[in-house]
Length: 294
Image 1 (cartoon, one colour):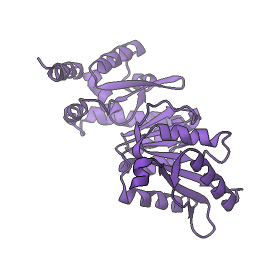
Image 2 (tube, rainbow, N blue to C red):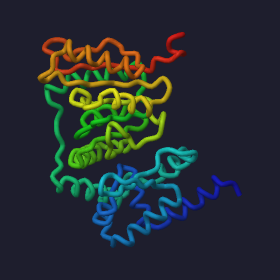
Image 3 (cartoon, one colour):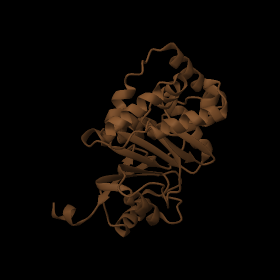
Image 4 (cartoon, rainbow, N blue to C red):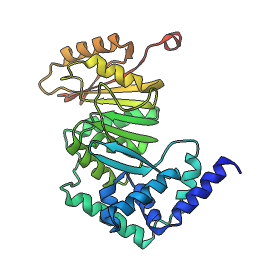
């Protein structure tokens, strides 16, 4: 029997238990912690952990650590990703029990002090500029380094195949995780990470955003080099820099120097908005032999 068929049989067996099916339905909406699943399902922590272990063994869920917590989500990559999507599409959206579980999870995150926020007038020009960059070229797999509370991640997630936000602030990640659940963006994930040492393999993303982290960085070229490391060939690096208390010509000069040091081709930086600018937005790509020849 082929390995793919054996995997499918294991997945059917894992989903045959109602509690495990409810867990998968929740984790398909966004990453969930063991404590959240325990509270929503009303089961004991050891029982929930045992179910999660079986779902991971069947290849339906993946496990990762974020700071002090362990989260589970539906595995989105791998050789059997398409098969897994077809299988999970059979889970009925309108099932009352699944709907109640979803409502409980949303209420639980809301009860922990997380409420939805609106885009401010200050943010709108930047958001329009970022969306404009995605029209001509898709984002593919996206990472937002310094994502904070996830506003840019939430803005661009629907235009990405996969979207990951990285921040060192656990409260910001908690807020962003709740916001993404409320927005119904299951392709998003949050990770604890240091911009100088990102927890990802080489060439894992198509688009990387350095989200207003360079101005005060002690080693800006190292942060840029680390972002370049995880970009695939032909990938784009978007650099956001706040102009608050910054001189724009000086910042442009420093940005050009950082990119030159790291071997990047930097397009002219854009002031956003053009009148009384608040942000500097730049796009950089690898400057290699193939690019030069083109």
